[in-house]
Image (cartoon, rainbow, N blue to C red; front, side):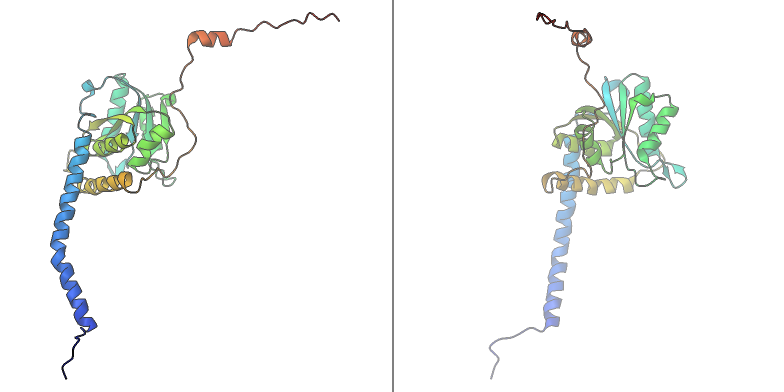
Length: 252
């Protein structure tokens, strides 16, 4: 008697599943590649009008946010770092930036991006009172959003390389922050291809953070304003004038 129902063995079922996966894999890879490329180009497009590539294009900013990175790669100076610091010093010397917010990772005592940047600015005779540190700038989203939410500045200049600037501006725009970015040079001895490829995935992550997960900085807290609004001089003077004391007319 013929069997009316044919039951596949588990081995055949598994083989068929594997074949289907391999059949769809090229299409999935193509879609993923196209999506990553589209996101990368879109992020760049969003920032196109908010980038400076020359100090002559910059008028003046009360605050510049310098995004941190490691000073050394092994025993070699990291040009991503030195170019950011050199740009910050140049802008201060030209009178185009008054204060610096140095934002970066503070993973452990031997690795402290904000403090390392501060030491180099102090060596360049930038006054300590014009330098502020954000030890919780673990990633670009934290650095940009905390500049507004913690340090109470909503109109600032970011200093980094162009690929990083574009993502930082994209994040700022998505959080209604009025930021511009000074795009400094990258390494001169190599193309930075690996860094640029990582940036492609970082941009995809930024899009997910903003539109899917609504990611927030790791740490928030009370405001620590960099700029304290000054009272009008007339009001300030009046606040130091003694008010006349009313004298009681009651007989003693």
